[in-house]
Image (cartoon, rainbow, N blue to C red):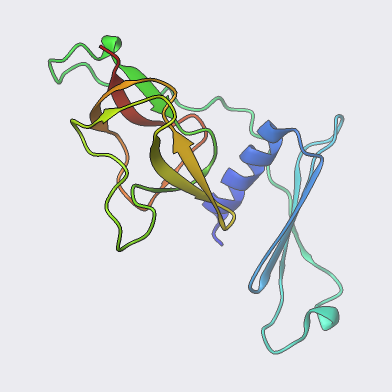
Length: 166
């Protein structure tokens, strides 16, 4: 797990309102604690693979991450394509994770540009912490544009699709 993924996890926990999150993946343990008066604290502990987890190093490496004070960059679409994109509805990611257009590698995509979707149709899957979350359309219309590549990381509130509701 790299620093960018840890920072994204900290932002996600801060927005979720959880007071403590523990994550163990392979040889990395992460604990994120938030409090009303204190900043987020991230503890990253590397566990050597030859040692059992009970015999891990007694002093974890501690990394103090800054509280996410900066606002996320505006996600405005460029208007140089010639289309008036203001008439389209943007489907945004409700969570941080990895974006997938297919239910599995050997299956067809959920939707393509030009497909008509109804409210409740599955548009994609976002994997977050080994959980696969189906993202359903909140509107009926035609898919105009897919804004994210398959198997790409996505942020909270990142635009995924443009849908023409007409």
